[in-house]
Image (cartoon, rainbow, N blue to C red; front, side, top):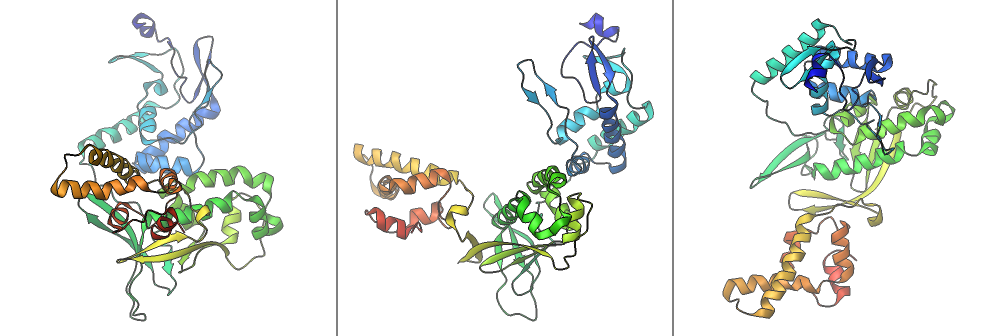
Length: 390
């Protein structure tokens, strides 16, 4: 192996982006090579692998597709920071072969110039000598939200013990005396993501909103790419900005307003729409106040995506253990009292237990409310009422 690599021979492994393999030799794939040159060039221009990864994802650049010996096709996924760092440090792209700590001249052609390679390596050297910045909390809806009174809603956070919680909170206004709204960020983001994903995945709805300008055969692949962007905080924020989006949060409905002309442009349809008013994506919800927070609840329980709470599931397991401990005896005082509280969970209705396992419990049901239910009814019908299942 070492002797072959000294001669610059390719000795196998995953074929890198930018090359094809023929007769055990690496030959340039010009289409992929252009992507490689773009990655190296944009890394120097942006100065950040994270920003580069976000840009590549937004523009649909994916990793190389490879067919395995068993017929499986792998790759074709967005580049992670780690995958980009590996690509940008790969000496293959300047025509070399690495073996351990040694680098030899390769038989294959280089894709990038020595100057571009050196500029990229200097960025890595600079980054390794700089202190890592503190990670900020992602708030993709920041700048797009307002409550039903017209107050801007911005990001905020709070700490409970070692855990940190994100919120969107109404900014104070001299025109309104009502208490600011404070909504858990993950709940609100999940509603918005669900609304956008449902709209983008529905070609009939898109055509109805955009008219004849929308051509399904052109927009469908792009719509699928936009759906992928919705699940990434940075990509979602850029998408909302590109669409001049406004998100209005009301007691019973959340409305996502989009500019139709800009949506048409983003879908690459190439047509024009005569529609002036924004497209409105409405998601029916309900809100329940819990302390200082407003909890979002989907109006149709079956439409709420599963939100599995592992701590609730662990609590059910603790209830089973406590029940067995009480049967075996030996517990006294406060330990026995706590075990009695936990053991009551052994008698929950089977459908309630199943709902908790599947993440379909009411949004207000958590470990605290489950344990603090002073008298959990034995009758299953009453349990459902008390715990919010009916």
